[in-house]
Amino acid sequence: MIDRLSASDSSFLYLEDASAATHVGQVLIFVTPDGFRSRHVSEAIRARLDVHPRYRQRIHTLPGRFITPVWVDDPDFDLDYHVRRSALPAPGSTEALQDFVARVCSRPLDRSRPLWEVYVVEGLSGERLAVVTKIHQALIDVGDITGLSPDPQTRVAAAGPWVPSPPPSTRELIGDTVTGLIRRPASAVETARGGLNELRATAGQVARVGRTLAKAAVSPPSSRDFAIAPGSARRYLMADIQLADLRAIRDQVVRHSGAGASIHAITLTVLAGALRSWLQGRGDPMTQSRSVRALVPVSVSDESGPYGSRVEAIFVDLPVGEPSPMVRLHQIRFALEHQLAEHQGVRAQDLAAMVGFAPPALHSLGIRLGASLSNRLFNLVITNVPGPQRPMYADGLALQASYPVLPLTSGHALAIGITSYNGRVHLGVLADRDAVPDLEQLEGALADAVEELREAAEHNPEER
Image (cartoon, rainbow, N blue to C red; front, side, top):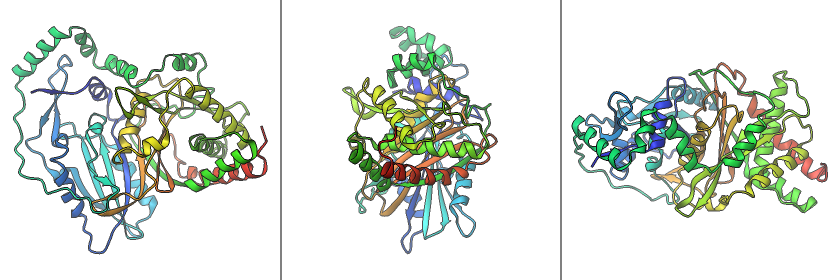
C-alpha cells in the first residue's frame, strides 16, 4: 500500500528552503546517574523504532509536483547518523549549549534520509546531559522518539531484526495517482499548484479563523517589529520562570480585584514587560500606543479528535508602550477573554493530563498556523503548551527541563516557545542571528518583568 504525505506535510516540503527550515525540536535536560553512558540513549531510541516505524522512513518524490510525495522505508537507514554524540567545552555552560542548539538548528534536515536527528550532548555542568531533537513537521505527529514517561521504570524491549520494504516503482506511483485523481479530480489542481493551496486549505482544518483574520487584516500591527529578510543563521536562548511566581501574581490579582487572571495571560504580560525593556535597551522609541502583535495559537477541543488536536488563531497586541504592568495585564486579559469567547478552548489541566508528554507536536500545530497566514498580520509567534506538573523520565533518566525550539516563520526574526513542566516555565527563544544580535539581554529582562509585575500586583492592585 502506497503511503502518501498529507496535504499539509507536502506543503511544508514545498515551502522549505535553506533559510526557512521548518523542523521543530526541543532541548531536554536530564540528570545523569553514576555509570551512565551516552550510548544508552542510542540503545533506547533503537528499541523504540519498532513502535514508531516512520522514523526509519524517508520521503520519496518524483520530478515536478503532480505526484504527491510518499513515505518509503530507507534501505540504508543508519541509526548512528540520526543519533549523534557531542560534548560541550568545559565548564559546560548554558551559553555553550545555547550556541550548540543555534548551530544545529540552523541546518535543514537531509531530504535523502529520514527527517529527524537527535544530539546527545555531554559535558553540561552539574552532572547533566542534554538531548537536542530536530524533527521535521512532516514527521512530528507519529510519536515521541524520546520515550518520556511518568514511570521511571518504563523501558521498551530491544528491537528485533528489521527488513525494509521495497519502494513503489514509478509505474505504481503514477497508477495510484491516476486512480486517486479519478476519485478526487479536484485534488489535481491543488497538487499542481505546488502545495501553497494545500497549506491554505490546511489552515482551514487547523484553525477556524475567519472573523479573527478579518479583524487582523483591517487593523494590522502598529509596527513591523522583528520583520526581516530571510537568513539562515540563528541564535537561541533558554530562560526559566518559576510557576509559583506566576501563581502568586494571579492570587494577588484575584485577592485585590476579585477578577481572575489566567496563567497564560500573566505569562504574556511578563513577555510584554520583557520586550518593552529589551526594546528600550536597544534605544527604540517607546510611545504609549506602541504594541507588538503576537500570534498566540490556542488549543481547542474537537469532537473529531483529542484535546489539542486543533489550534485556532488568537492575535494579542502586547502593549509594550504601556508603562504600567497592571494596565498591560488588564489589556492582555481583555484581549484573550474577548477572543476566547468565540472559541472552545482547551483547559491547561486537560492538555497537561494528555497521555505521554510530546509538546513538540502541539508547538508544531502553532507553527503550522503561523506559516499559513500572511506575515504582515503579526510580529511573532508565541506558543504556550502546558506540560505535566510531575517528574518525567526517559528510560530511567530524570527530566529536569524541556525547552521548545520553534522554527522562524517566513519574514520573522523571533519565535518564542513556552513549555511548563514540574513547577517551572521553560522558554525557548529562536532568533535570526543578524537581526537579533542582543538576544541574551532578553533573559534578564524576563526576570525583571516578573518582579515588576509581582510588585505591581501586590502594591497597586487597582491601577488601571
